Amino acid sequence: MSLRQKFDMLLGEILAHCQAVYGERLVTCAVYGSVGRGTPRPDSDVDLLVIVDDLPAGRVKRVQEFEKAEERVAPYLEKLKFEGLSTCLSPVIKTPAEVKEGSLLFLDMLEDARILYDKGDFFASYLLQLKDRLERLGAVKFRRGNSWYWVLKPDYRFGEVFRI
Image (cartoon, rainbow, N blue to C red; front, top):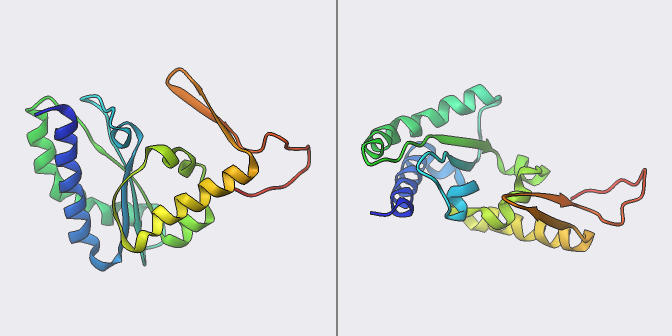
């Protein structure tokens, strides 16, 4: 089994356990970064965006709730170690309202996000709106080797205020 296939199987496990833990509250589960791009290494972490309705306030409580899904995935992660894949989960956990507020993190998800589950196309629609907004601003993504950066508004004038 190829490395990508192993990660794909792991993503199926992650999604199933997120659905079991969050139930109907789960809005979106997406992977980004090297796993989302399909270019993982055996030691790549799994960058996850988990969007959930009615999350508890505070990062610690959210992580504690996510740990229930992570505990369920743990035996599969352990099995993968014996197959040469040493990975961990790196979740970002947000409510739909927090997603709508925006985050620079979402800029990199425009091309790299692989949406595993998306109730009502919530996050896919958000990304389309963000892409449209960036196009209207004239934003440009510059690549330099394996890294990149954004110029969000090339015609920016000092003191000007804009939102992405």
